[in-house]
Image (cartoon, rainbow, N blue to C red; front, side, top):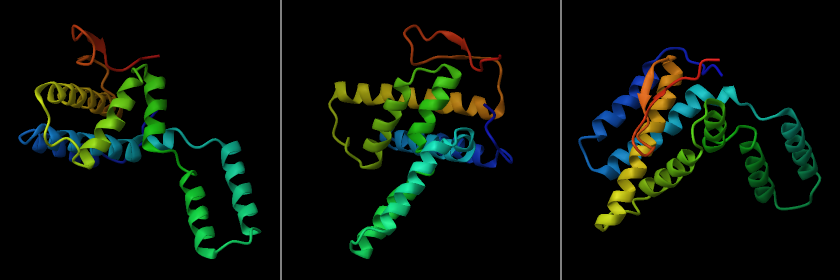
Length: 177
């Protein structure tokens, strides 16, 4: 897998967004980290995992069938638009594939997805201590995921600390094959 990039300005922008938010609340940091991961995926990884041709063929057939259905044009337009959304993989789906490719636990994707949705909708403003600790650990997991993606983009081949595993072991950040 070779993440495409035409420079590192965007990568730096996402890193800087997280850095600035780190001086704020955990909720603000989680939001910055969550949207930065999504941005990294769209910018650098989406093209590494295109939608398979057979899926695209099925989508195109569905769109052709939709042409012949006698329903309200507004509904037809919405259905066509929905089908068009499947021509690209979602950031979540791409992240699952990235994790598989570089041997990162896919639970990080589920943690990222949940935390990103909660932080975007400000659902966790009043948390008790236990919920705050869980939220903080989820943020740390997302932060780790962000750095693992960053390492792929810059082709970092050294070690890093896995803050998501018990004992925080030092691991190789980039699988060399």
